[in-house]
Image: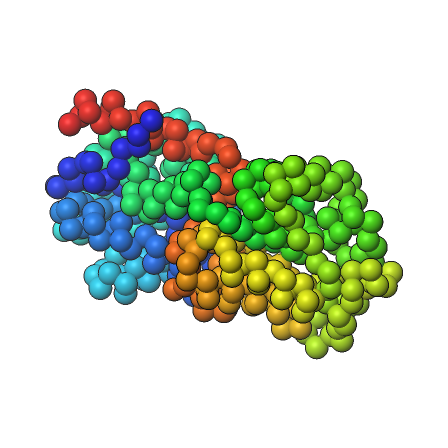
Length: 398
């Protein structure tokens, strides 16, 4: 079913409430990465150009619901938006029962999670949010897997509801990856635990040509192959699942290239003495923190011949210099492949992309974490399903 988009709706002179994802990292009250704010600027500018009265809405962190907490205020976001848009973006603290925008064409509403019932998708709260606007624009892909008042509930009760450009671009990029990719398809999945990405690995093993895994996930797969991984993080209770996924890939003639050598140490710390070991030679008291040089060479060769690349998660403890070489090599190999369609997503992945300055060489960088994984797992997003049901409602209003 088709999703109604912002370009389908006449916004002129209307109060337009846009749900964005401004859940940015903060340190001492300052934004340390504005990627999510930058991603929303196009949508905001389009609404302003259409002569709408724009209200922006988002969550930030996990405050106690129903309680104002300055540590989770969107004030830093309001200041940053004002700089990016070159116009003042006032922060409205008390807005749920209605407010007067006055002469302002754009405002930012204070953290939606300061309202009790937000994360529980409270019906009355959803209705109050919907009453604020003529048009609701859902543009926060990163929250589209959650049934909350400011994402799912408001979509049900708003006079008109539609998807914003950012949400649509996310859906289109991931659809291109999952539905009709150009082969060979290479997926790189890192992370500490198989359990958190089991559904993703299961889904990708049925679709890609190469499934490259790293971190604790790779350790579990190595253990499934009979290797001793010392004191490395791995999940013994998921060895059977690792074997099943490996078998699934083999049935399709797909490959899961495991490390042949790794970088080990006794603890994760800057300046820690580290060693390169063959996977058959790891000592009982050692921990794996990165892939070794021969493994990196094999994996980058695979990446270089890919026509479609999906990247989710670093493959080593890249925040520590001694164990960053694998993730850096992968980031650079992806950047250097100019023939592939490349999509990346996930919080740690975004940090690696920023660290190695390869953002401009990746076709699409997803701002969603849980939603990104949900779609890649082959599941539907509740908010997108709710938007699909808005076609008829929007037609009646028009």
